Amino acid sequence: MTPGTSFSWCRHRDKEFTQFFSKEGNLVFCNDVQRLKKCFDIEYDPSEWRLFIDSSKTSLKAVLLHSGNSFSSLPLGHSVHSEENYNDLSMILEKMNY
Image 1 (cartoon, helix red, strand yellow):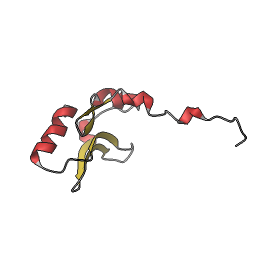
Image 2: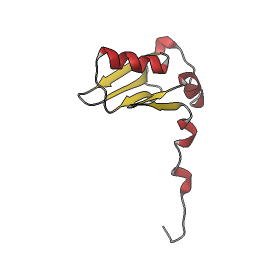
Image 3: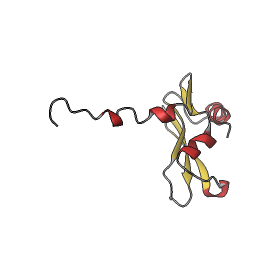
Image 4: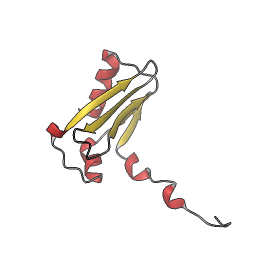
């Protein structure tokens, strides 16, 4: 690239989606799943989607997966200081209103 060339269009591509996420303590979660899906023009049929929760010793994440793999996964929650136990799973499901 030549000096003075700018490509700022890709620097903040996440800004339009930050309105759908909130942070509470160590948990970042989707606060409006329905509107997030509308941003991607996704028609929601519950029989075609499943909630996937993955965890390790130090982190927990939740995503919606499309059964037919026609759409990419939608991130719904993430925490780097949670693990797969009843309290943390209950908290993430409650915050997402799932």
